[in-house]
Image 1: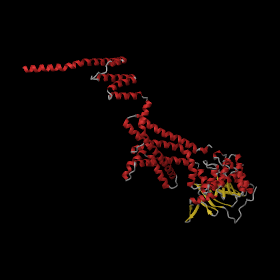
Image 2: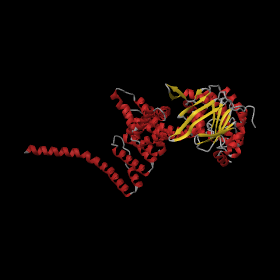
Image 3: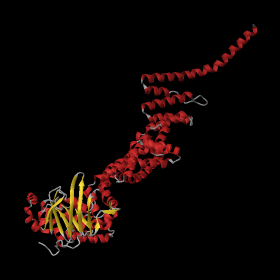
Image 4: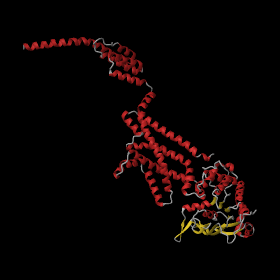
Amino acid sequence: MRSTIRRGFLLLIGLILLALPLAASASEHNSSQTLFREASNLIAAGDYQAALKTLDQISPPSGRDDAGDFVKSRMQKAQLYHALGAFDEAGSSCREVLALFPDHMEATQFLASLAKAQKSKLALFFDDMKLFLPSLIHGAGMTLFLVVITMMISPLGGLLLALGRMSGVAPLRGLCWSIIWFFRGTPLLLQLFFIYYGLPAFGVTLSPTISAIIGLGINYSAYLAEIIRAGIESIDHGQMEAAKAIGMSYTQAMRRVIIPQTYKRLMPPVGNEFIALIKDTALVSTIAMVELMRSANQMFNTYFNVNVLIIAAMIYLLFTTIFTVTFEKIEKRVGAYENR
Amino acid sequence: MKTDNTRHAIPGDAPIIRLEKVTKRFGHTIAVNAVDLSVMPKEKVVIIGPSGSGKSTLLRAINILEEIDEGAIVFEGRQVGYVEKKGRRALDTPKNVCALRAEIGMVFQHFHLFPHMTVCENIMEGPMTVQGKSREEAHIIAVDMLKKVGLLDKQGVYPATLSGGQKQRVAIARALAMKPKIMLFDEPTSALDPELVGEVFNTIKGLADEGMTMIIVTHQMGFAREIADRVIFMESGQFVTEAPPKEFFGACMKHPRVASFVDSIL
């Protein structure tokens, strides 16, 4: 019984000894907390200037004192200034903290986001451009490569298909008709898939680049074939007769007389096709080709930044604009004989 | 108006071109019905007749622009457009057809100049592409031909800027540049304004005076009267009557069809 009382007494003494310094610090703590409470009441009331002044009363720590309240007050000030749009003051609040704790993470980040907030939208866009352009340009190079290659293949393929389609030899005519029918009648995406993923089943494995060139080349040849055929058939039949009458063969008449006259008529529809081609190259991103669309997609998935898509769209527009203007110029030049 | 170069068919002389029972059908319509015709070197034959009578078809058949269904066309002893293969008639090779066409000049109603080439290039095209002549040689020929038709000053322009009469003269020069042995004119003035007929007529007349063999299909009675050694009236794919112009416009006018046709034209 006695020992129990003694143990209880000792516990009481211990508790009192423990509580003494706590009580001493609590008095100081209480004063900061009162200030914080006062400040948040003022903020709630909408008196921000008074709130800022209140927060200012929390003085920098002296010596080994705990600086938590000071840091908290300065960060709150920074946020308040930021909310008020006073970025410079918000910055100096952050710097007060950084002066004490140069590595303080919250202050550093806040300062960085302040810098960002102070930049114009345009400047931010240019920052994104700097970040995204290198890989987008790399992709755009591949897009341009595919467009140029297809632009070289498809008029030739289209001409051969068109001539075959108009040929007097029935099997050749049938074959060319079928090729045009098939490649115009099925989606380009499906054709690309078939060439890249399907042909290996038949023992033909092609690289993505070769697959893309073959797919785009044949598809666009089929489309151009019908345009070219229409162009050739639109030339007055008398031209062919006049060419034959001076002894030209069919081939000579086509090459020297008929086809040169189709150029002007072909420019608008062919230009149209080539603009469609620029955009259709985006489809080859599905067969592991890294071109503009795929680059943009990759960057977007990494950064979730919509500016990537805007910049990619701008590059596509740049390409189509250059093509449109160029084709208009060429059209004027090849048709010059009509109004000279 | 007859010149020294005028000549009539003399028996025993070899015709430059001979048509034997030439027949051409379009479906059930017979455009040319078993026509016989011999044209002597330097002879000028004018064919007249109502439209749809088969004149143009006949002319086009000579240049193998129309295939014929029966008969034969013989140009300087060679059959035109066809060969006998195991007793059957077959189309000649394109190469032979082209070679023959190169020797037969043809002028169309609607000129058919190549619009993407200058006047000079139009004329140079045949000699260069077909005969393989150099640009310089072809240019000399073109200048020569343009002098002949009186359009040397137009050599650098495109056909679009020319009048109809000028276009037809260039078309004549283009045909002449191939140095043809015979010239076929398919209604050369029918597409022209009346005031432009004269210049084309004079060009053809000049050619006739030089002794060019020619077959002219026309509605211009003046042509027939002034140029022809022989005028043929064609109707429904057949030759109704043929005679030297004096006779034709004299005695033959008694022929009721000829009389009514000539009346309708004049």
